[in-house]
Length: 223
Image (cartoon, rainbow, N blue to C red; front, side):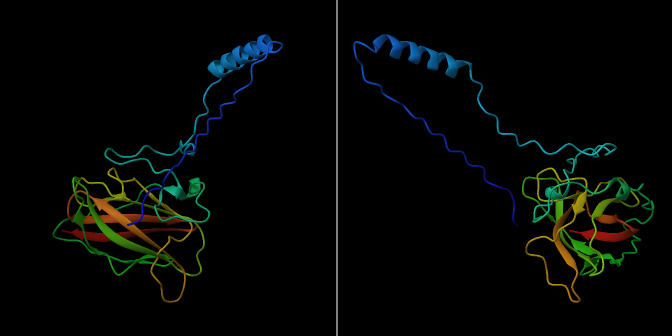
């Protein structure tokens, strides 16, 4: 899995040594005092790494999940990663509260966005974490180039769906550009390698929203 970024800093300290002379001693001492006072009063520069503000109306993340920061929250995002999905994609969740461990009618989704390889997922538990993770490849048909918002929850019981590699998963998956290392899809289109995170095996559902569609995909997670 690809993850993270490295930050580096280079600090350069320049020390100037001036010569001493009887005619310039007073002015040199005065200049050194002024420089020392300026250095003490100067405020150190601050490297700002805070994420961009969330759009107004963005709901808080469910308990146990981290707030999605936009397109750049997707670990394999590249190209135009700035910004967030349009507010128009944040439609109310219409995931049916049905389906349990004994009855789970899975579906891989339909165009323009679907799951490659089907919706029966095998999840493994992260070391030192109470979250399980399953690999999911999302595929957008060649004719759709817009943004995608993916959310989810458990059906027939309490349980949330998270995304990503973090110790605390994100509450949404916001997609725009394709991810690096995406699988080759027959017929073209865009693809994203991702991780779906759940705490227990069972029956779950995604809600996938685009500019002109809203789809529900039911999936089962097995350990």
